[in-house]
Image (tube, rainbow, N blue to C red; front, top):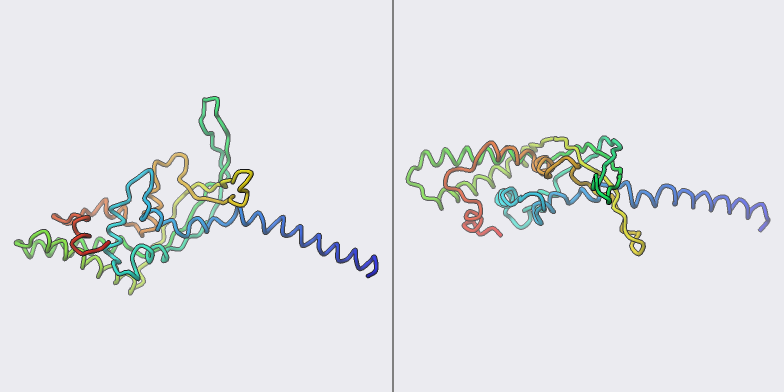
Length: 235
């Protein structure tokens, strides 16, 4: 092989190496925030959150899709996320103490598309309240069974009719670095903004407005979610 050919091959090799170092590796660590987002709803509804108790929303979704092939995993799979805007922000940690530190993160605007579970819930409550009014002698078990069955029916209907909602939330995107022994664990994560108390806005978007709707439209009289799950033998 001539010296000229060797130089050409060396140049090509160096070019490929620069591309790998400059593009591929940083992307693995820093830019693919979708990896963190794809199971957010499942994590919230299954493992909860340190800042807020999401149990009531978890129970509603389990009643809405109780079959083994559906459930919370089904809800989780049917959410689309898209980060449509990034803005560089500065955050002062432990301000005014000897541990004060300046950090930087991206404030991101996330477009969240999901089924309109709020509509299903609202319709189920409306129907159950009508049932209670028309059946004054109905006991709690009968009311709870009606509500659970109606919730499942309404949940199926929004999917059949492809009733979807689009909401926007603002969150904090930052890189979490591994230590010297675990550099490969560096990853981009999505968290609440420094001024936010909880992630209810994010859960609300993932559940198509359900959090807001449950705040406005209370459960029918006599319905206890835990009792209803047990009554319907939903785990």
